Image 1: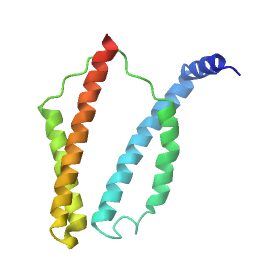
Image 2: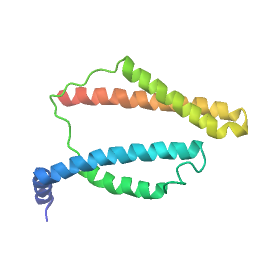
Image 3: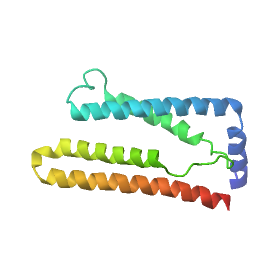
Length: 148
């Protein structure tokens, strides 16, 4: 099958209402399961045997991966006419909170080694903040270049 035929076939599949609806459902369930898995993993990391007494997290991870594949394959791009707001105070505050939360988690898990844990938590905070700001800025620049 040629490359053009395969692209046309995939395009016709993505226009199918059933596949599009199933993909949207898979995306919503994937988001819920991913957030649940990450929160339970965080709880398990902080408090030993808190989540693993109730649920094996590996089974939840398998479900996240299995639902993540169709969620990614059926994801639709956002319309070009949708206007994205520039990064504001809310975005900066969310990035700062994520950086501080990451630093606290790293410090909590490494506090037994002494003063290097403080240095590692500061570096992790800086990395989280810098990478988050780069992603936010790249998203804005990507939208600008698409419009041209």
